[in-house]
Length: 89
Image 1 (tube, rainbow, N blue to C red):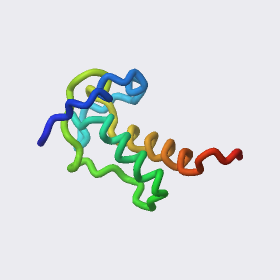
Image 2 (image 1 turned 120 degrees about the vertical axis):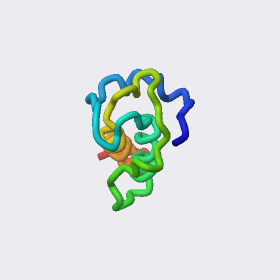
Image 3 (image 1 turned 90 degrees about the vertical axis):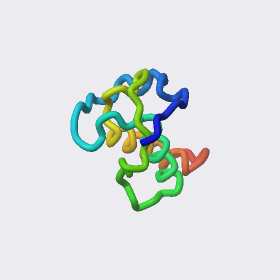
């Protein structure tokens, strides 16, 4: 699998994701998972799960050993929120 070299690996916000040391998500880039979720949220897609096999690996920075599932969910939430533009709720 490819390795992620994007600068989002060092985004401090990923430091607060829960640790994930096992399973299929191990070593997957949470920055890429967040982006995947964000774009699904912007589109308000009814597909609300991360495609782990499409994510590159990463062991760098704040994404190391963090949950790609939670990163995707947070990205989806933020994307849906942003899809409403400047509407005030």
